[in-house]
Amino acid sequence: MGRSRSVTLFLAFLMIHRNMTLVHAITHLKQRRRICPNWGFLKQLRELDALLLEQRRGTHRPLSFAPPPNP
Image (cartoon, rainbow, N blue to C red; front, side, top):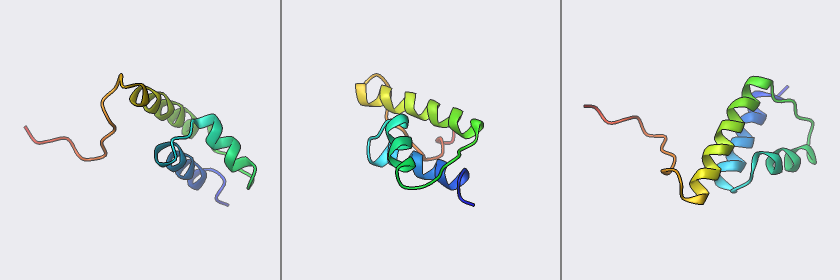
């Protein structure tokens, strides 16, 4: 248990709050426990990785988790 969904959340946490790339976050976590995020979650994490890379380079607006404003 806890090898796909919870791992995906923790990988996203490492990427966002510890400024890790997806590869670095996976390597970091694999050294500590068995993980097996499913392909759909990995696809979403790759998209997040690309967004975070753009943000770090200054080519993308900062991530916002707030709901969009009402028109």
